[in-house]
Length: 207
Image (cartoon, rainbow, N blue to C red):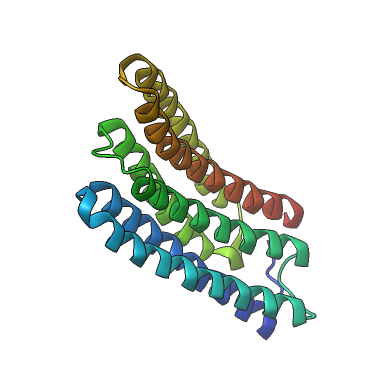
């Protein structure tokens, strides 16, 4: 794939790369929230909110640049969708942390922690891939397939957790609290797959 060289094209890809760094920060903080004692979660979750706010500003900065630029490396609407989806991934991570605090859940359990590990892996892979947007090629499919594999694994874990919840939880309110957290973790993983799909769409258009 030939990359259309132009200063504005290089800048917008650097801005997207900078925006994507917040994915890793947010995912790591989510892991901290999940493993913290309930009394400590709120303070860590505030740090997660700060990252989410920084990510919002980074998203607005990219989109403002896209809007005013005439020469771009890829289709304008694709770049808007990409930056929106990065922001959506971070919003989902932030919501998952919120749910742990708001629903006052205790220890999440080994399988839920595996879902958080998947989120961290998705964030790391996506952040790395956003640094290669200037040279999308067949190697990009390794990232796309990798995210799809993680999403499938996450789905399997999710179904197992939900099945176990309905068998073991003593009260409906406890079930609802934990399910709210688990649902937000699944939604986060799904959003990363959506993002990988957008990268695949750009790859197909530009190949």
